[in-house]
Length: 139
Image (cartoon, rainbow, N blue to C red):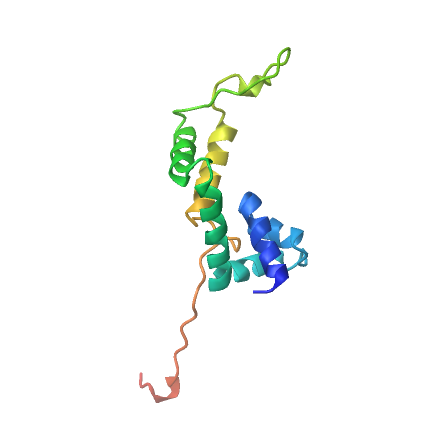
């Protein structure tokens, strides 16, 4: 794996957005989605990302299970955290403690990305079936 691909992997770990990560790593905007998808399929890239994630999660950060549970609860409208607000300031009206539809949609989107529900191409890959020997068939 070359340095540019490692840069992509590091950028990918910031927001798990393969297109944005490819652009930030220096790849063309035009081919960023395809480039990101291609790199993420590389075994070396998968290993590199997994090692980085293991290193990050070994610190006193939220564990993956915690994050998944929290996002699931937000998506279902069951939980919302309390914000640390500086003295003299208040939360915007949409963040008054209620979970908004936008919050639930974002949680669903993040969970979908985590589980690979969505693809950058917008659909499943279709493998064409080629039938040969038509001339030999009888009616």
